[in-house]
Image (tube, rainbow, N blue to C red; front, side, top):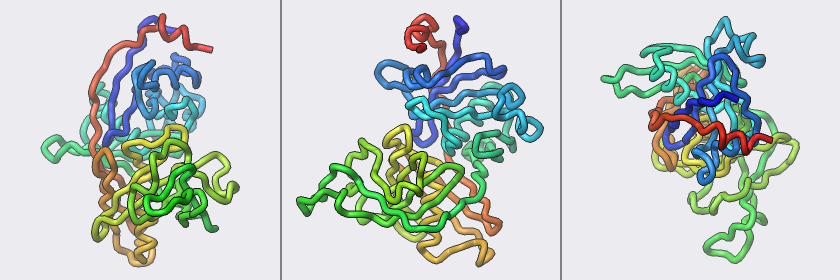
Length: 304
């Protein structure tokens, strides 16, 4: 492993990431190393890791190199591989801008969930980043979620005995969206919320708990697969907006009219628009907060 390993730290609505620039895909990042880097006490700390690689240099993205120069090799905080991360794409784009690889305007980013279109607004327009998140898939079948070991405030009963119906939404990664009366009903979200049937999510699921704040305005909490409860989840916010729209009787593919929802998360606010062609756009902030070098001697001690 290189003796000098650069990193940056960034966040999108407080969904935070360790960023490892590696254009030539020369740095090995086994799960144990990623988990240690993302550890908030033993490492740098983050909900996940953004491995910045040129598409042509990565075996999973070479077939996309003619469409997107850069590949977001995203890892969850536990070291596992994930298909996509909406907040991560915005932070990824902000890093590319900071490094001088791209400027304001449009670019394409390759991910395991496909190529995502990104627009970096001009600073005078607020500098927010909009990501084309693709189309939502709404699998058929009933899904329920619960919260293991949590007790309702008004009843001495385990919530695991009570199920919330959830909407199954796939945004390139799986989501279960449950509408609740109060976000506190989700409890501490220290463990993955149980779901049923198991066949609905064979590889696990991101679970969103949602309350209404006003017309086309909701708030949410999320337990992310492989990361735990996070301050924000971009694909989760998109899934929530789609689920809320269908619950409210809005389907742009039927009406021909875009629908926009404001989604409040513990770490900030995202604006989600679903267009008549099914494409979903997510707009929000992305910030780089620090950069430095990883101590390679220390890192060698955690390599399996």
